[in-house]
Each structure stands twice: as structure tokens, then as C-alpha cells.
Length: 590
Image (tube, rainbow, N blue to C red; front, side, top):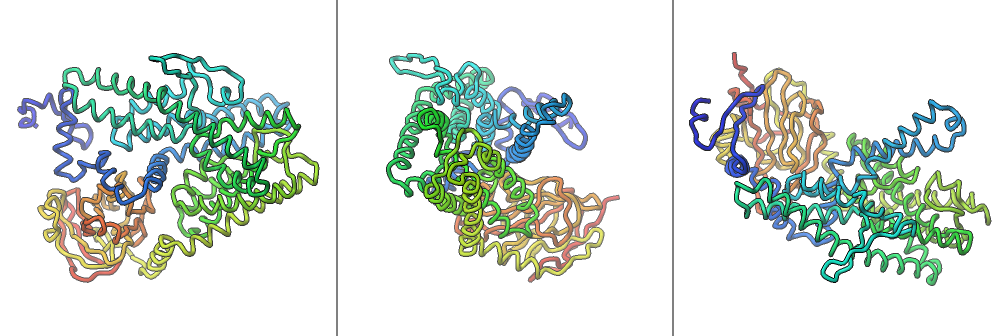
């Protein structure tokens, strides 16, 4: 401590709990962290240039889908909770005794407020998460998200439906409409990326003395100008083109037009270019008294719900998949597709395609039965209330949704059966069943892999072979499945999924690091089955690594397991090992 205090650049040190904390001047902490991260191989964890390098082997669509999926990982729990609350309040709103009882009405109103919260600020949440994931500081991302939803802007839905007229500015002869970006998920993702890039640029170029003031100022100012002069106008133009094109197809291409609209409608929702649909629905009702778009949008949503159920059937034994699939499907029953789209279907890609195909099939049924609605704004189960009863409308409404649901399940299962990635997952699950049960003993570490085991000094990474992070062993896995080497809680999971820490029941802390320098892969070849706070048992499946994908990037799959709490270990076995083999004993400190 005294030696640290004598360093000129260090402004002070203190101990908080079991952490040694050091104080540095403005701007210096980032430079110190850069040096520190090089020694711990985490220097590239959040840099966008590494993401771009890793993405060169993927097409733009794959990159966009992966980025969107990653951004939604941390905000998905909030979306799921809000979706279920929104479904609950949708039911309560239709119960007369709830409306007539002051207490029940108050509860319903509070639930409504709680359920709408995340959806009202979804663009802000996405912008924040995207900025952080792209390597920028999260606060500028939050500020940009707040600007997109500012009360000084006309609400995007109100503007699209003609309920409000936005103010128009002239900036150097360029017209700027002050319209908000409600529902603009893709735009929020783009702005998060832009904000992160600008934040990193100014962080490098501006002197430390004024960086704290000038860097965020320029980042937010330039991001705002780009938002309103380029992104906004492009968004509105695309929205107009896409919407006009889809409406033309439904009016002129007959059954094919209906199938096309139902098949791609949820894709349009993902992009946030769907605001104008409400205005068109209102105009249809005013002109004809009916609305043919509502049932098409409803079955499009239900197709995605069926895809979620199909994916759930494929992965029923995966607890974490069940935890997200079940509430995601339930939310689609009440007209809320975000959890299904962003939590499941978009992440795994093939369920999204299957859902779109199923929706197209149901769209044909909507056309053939002349199914319409007498209102707009509600879909799925609540939408039955506005279905047009003409031509057996209520029955056809239910049948149309069953047609979307059934093929959604079927197509997802069929595509999943023939998917290479799904076959690999099934093979891994079969391997898991072959793993013998482990009866863990105190202070014993068991093999997390099937493959070769060696002393930690044989690891190619000097951080590990010099025991800087503790003693342990290194493994060369033959299979990608990783099981827990001990009993205990999961302390830490790296955002890039390549490493996790576990504390044993005796208090020993260990780190499992999957591959060398795999942090640069941003989690692509890894799948985790546990999260921070979960309690695991020795031999329990905790992760899966795609060995071929890692090797294709020119990286080693060697997997060190080290005792980060620095207790000495005695290695019992090396060479060929199987999952759950006893390998090390830990000597507890007095």
C-alpha cells in the first residue's frame, strides 16, 4: 500500500471489503485500465474494431441480427416482465367488476403503468445497451435514447396517424421534422453504435484536462445532428416506401399479397418502420367500415408465437430455454411479440423464418375467408373483440390463428431437425446423458471436459503458465461440452461468455477460461447454460464451446482451470480424461 501511494500518478489507495482500490486523475484511469487489460487478455473486450474484425467472415444480415440479439440480452428480463403484466392488464380491463371496484381499478391502473414502462422507453434501453456493447460509455447512450423519446418531439405514433403535426425546422436549407422515434429499435441500435464510435474518437483526441467536459458534449451534439438530419429522414422515407408497397400488394395481388404482408409484417415491426399502419387502418375503417390489415397483423404475430413453441419443443430439456420461451409465447397470446422476436426467434434465426412462413399460410386463409376487423389497435386474443362477425368472422378469426400457430410449431421443428447447429446441440445433449454422476468430495476438482489434461505450466498463455492467476490445470477438449468441476455458486460470467468463475462450498474460487484470446470472438462460439448467482453441481452442464469455430479463427481451444483464490493444489491425474474425473485436490490455507 505504501509503495503504491508513492507512485506519482496514483492519488491514493484504500481497501473496501476484499478489494484494493486506487485513485487516479481525470482521464488517467482509462489509460491505466488499458495497460492492465493487456496483462489479463481483456483489452479487446469492448472495442468495436475487434467486433468488426471478427465480423468479416459474416454477411451484413448475420452481423445485424447478431448485434440486435446481443443488445437485447440484458434488457430481455424487463421486457418479459412488462409483457406479462401487459397481458394481465389487458384481461383486467375487460372485466366489469374490476372497473366498478375502486381498489381493483387502482391495482389495474398501477399494473398498466408498470407494464407500459419498458415499452415506452424501449428505444432508450436499446440505445444504452448498444452503446455499451459497442465499447462506448453507457451514459451518452442513455442521453441519446432520451433525446429520441424527448417530450419536445411529436410522438411518432401520433404523427403517423395524423393526430399531431410535428414542427419543421430549416437547418442550412435542410428540412428537419421534430418527430420522436418511439418503436425505432433499429434506429436506436444504429445510434448506439454511432454514439459509441464518437465517444471513443473524442476520448482519444481530446486532452485529459478538458476531456470530461468536451468529449460528452461533442458526442451528444454530433449524434443528435446525425439523428435528425440523416437517420430520421431516411427512416421516414423507408417507412413510406415499404408501407405503400405492402398496401399495394394486398390490394392488387390477391391471395399472394395477403401472404406477403402477413409473412413480412413482423420483420417490419423489428425495424420500427410500422408506425404508419395505424393511420392506414383508421383510414380503411373510415372509408369502408372494415379493416383487413388487423387480422393479417394478428396472424403474423401468432406465427412467431408458434415458432417459439416449436423451439421450446426442440429444447424442452434446457431449463434456461424454457424460462424464456414459455413467457415469450404467453405474451404473444395477448398481442405482444417483442419477447418472442428478440428473446428467441431472432437470436436463433430459423424460428423467425419458420414463423414468417406460417404467417404467410394463415394470410392466405384470411384472404379466402374475407376476414376483417371493425377496429384496430388490438390483436391475438384481445383482438377477437373487434373481429367482424360477418362471414363467420369469429370462427374464422380463431381458425386463422390456429393455422398460424400450428405451422409455426411444425415448420420450426422441421427446420430445426435439419439445421446443422441444432444437430450439434442434440449431439451435445446426448453426450451429456453419457456423463457419469459425480459425487463431489470437499476440496476436489473434477474434469470439466473430455480430452487431454496437463499441468498449468504447459499452457501456452504466459498469464496462466506462470501462475499469475493461480495454480491449476490446462485442458485440450475433444468435445465442446463443459461441465462444472465443483459444487458451488457461479460468481461471475464474462459478457463475452468465454470465461466464468465459481466458488466452491469450501470457499475456494476458480476460473474456467475457454480457449486462448477467445474474448475477441464476442461470445459467438459459446453457449452458457448458467448465469451469475446460479448454484451448480460437479458434472452439471454449464457451457458449450464450438471447437471448430474457434479453430477457424486461428485460436487455441485450450481451457485452463485455475484457483484464483491462490490456494495450492495437488494434481492427481493428467493425460486422457473424461467429464467428471477426479483431477486435483485443493489445500486450504490456515
